[in-house]
Length: 543
Ligand code: G1P
Ligand code: ZN
Image (cartoon, rainbow, N blue to C red; front, side, top):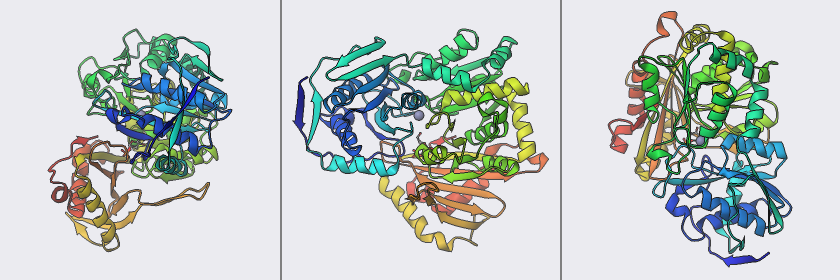
């Protein structure tokens, strides 16, 4: 086997963010860029000698080239085996499952999640550890440190592997096993959910539509929803993964999946609709005439989990990211379950899941998941909803109404100000931090601040501390605003403003969320000076 050792120099800015290293595709395609980052991962985990990895991605532009480079670099560094999805494809949750199923030492997922794909769009690399979950902050810091002292990388000089063929290939001293990306994942879902009950619901005339947004879940959704559960052909739309996702943002929210939302709001709407993102870890849930917020979805899944075979024994606890609405907390309180609020990003759930403190986790950004893998899982959430609907035999709208009547309704929305000047964004947050102690008791646009904090989290399992995780403002009357800067963007800064208002009176449960939350939005704007500091009069994206 011919191994080349290429001299290289550290590249600035190889800093993994909320979810892996994300950059413009052209940046990743620069000479040595990908190689440097991959070698930094190998170095940070103590080398690859004798190790087993899982590899796959969401099929975006450069996925195929990057997979070949990574395989050659794994062979050069002495890996024993790499399990790779056919054509280099694996959804993020399927990769997490394969790592756990095979007891692999970790895995690499090629994705920039819901960011657009293509030569002028975004690419990303995530490293997951042996538990199947995203690398914790201690490791992402170590990877960055390695990237700053790198002087060479090793690569096996070989022709491309035929990744379209299922089976084993020997590659230098390493074995590459190309697997069907769907099969093991489908088997896991069939264990967790009552496929017979869901198939019965569908056979009885229940109509569903799943929008794969030309991203990685197309083959998974077709195989499970159409082939295994009997949904008519064509129930899965935009099912063929494309390198540029058909030119769209593969982000399942009311903005980027507006066609699907229009479909459920119009005549002839199906009973249920859903979408997933680029790499298959996010989900959006809709019913006829209704959009379910991700925060509400987490709460509904928590309240009904015991109706599904995978959670028949009940839940151990629930975790949500801090900006996610407190709807799940209300279910936890009513059921006597522990409830945790973590910083944004799935990596913070890993320890809680591994230690058995929680069973369900969720984020307001369309992420829900359980202890079946160590990632959020879009199709899992869809199947859980279908299983619950098959048992309860109610419409999505009726189920939501019953849920709010029992637990109250946490009205919720998120406003994103995208591509704003990085210095202005940092200044806004810094100024807020300085003023935090003086805020309680002050009125802003008619709302009085009850509490204000810069969110910090101490992991209850390993004691690690994450600070500066977002500014949380509580107002009298149960309203809340959270402000934080995105850690996944690739251009300028994105300010996220999260707004929440609890209503419990029966006559208050069916209002327009935008109206209920308008006073909180006004107070947050005055308090933080968003318009003044960013020059924006309105958010770019409201979800
Ligand atoms: C965003 C979401 C966050 C999610 C992450 C990865 O991160 O807000 O909940 O975990 O994408 O999907 P952000 O850009 O806000 O840092
Ligand atoms: Zn994703």
